[in-house]
Image 1 (cartoon, helix red, strand yellow):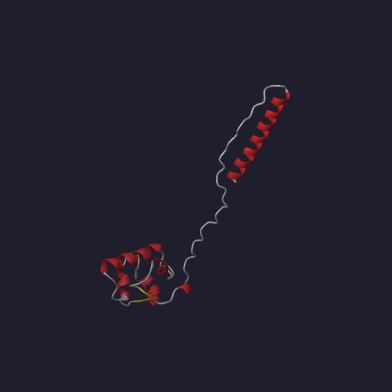
Image 2 (cartoon, helix red, strand yellow):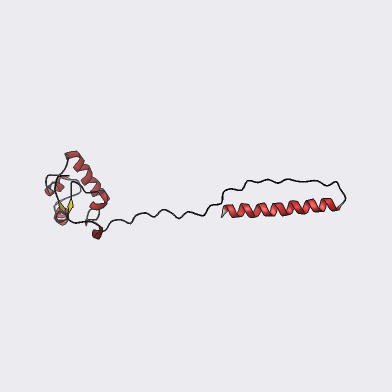
Length: 128
């Protein structure tokens, strides 16, 4: 849009200068030349915004999920597991060097007995 406005302004300027030159020449003065130069910016088609990938859904993830290979996106598919809890799971996995059992989820901040009962069926543990 800005490029079109600049281009239109340049055309108007050229028409005005041409008119002034013609008027000046009509009154019997010495002819003169005016050079107007303007570097037009490259006119590009507006790029479409990059498509962000849609968040994963339960249909996109093979359940149950291996706690030792799960990604943040996979973890957040599980009900009651948001980004904060998913990050806590990943950090804990890093700290302990990998899970040996699903029950270790109880040792993670934000996962109590009730949450554990809800999410445990969605996970299993296998070496990475």
